[in-house]
Amino acid sequence: MKAGGHSLKAALVGLSALLSTQSVAATVDIRDCLLENTTFVDWLNSITFTGKRVGTAYAFNCEDGIEPPDPSCEGPYGELVVEGELRNGAAAAPETVYAIWSVYKSVPCCGWRLSKPGDNDPQSWDGFIWLKPGTSPKLRDQAFYTIGSEDEPVFERPLFAVACEMG
Image 1: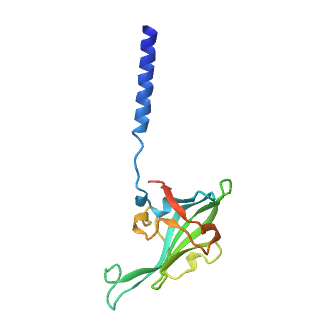
Image 2 (image 1 turned 90 degrees about the vertical axis):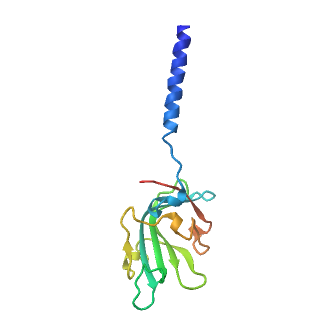
């Protein structure tokens, strides 16, 4: 009887430990993720892109005497740049790239392109700024949940937002 009591006690302690670790997990709405911490994935081709920092080169169209962020202003137009690590294959080494979301007052209005440091660096664009860590836009505030472009071989199939680091 004593041995059985010890095994029951051990089982209860083990169950308690398991339940206590399970209660630590929290549900996260992917839309609440900052772009600088979001990972996008194309599972079929084993491609991942993880944002590291975000910058913008935006302009607004406002009537004379009106300044953004006044709601009567149109925009923002321009570029949203997500600098991150691209892995093109499960065993591939990460490569730093810029995923650039461009918005224009035209049809089509917007689209993705890919750039590497040294090729058309955003820092050389008029009005470009890197946003302070923790201040990048949330995924929910964007017109996209995927990164994709038929013009970019790496992004030919959409990469879906699947995870983020909450800080």
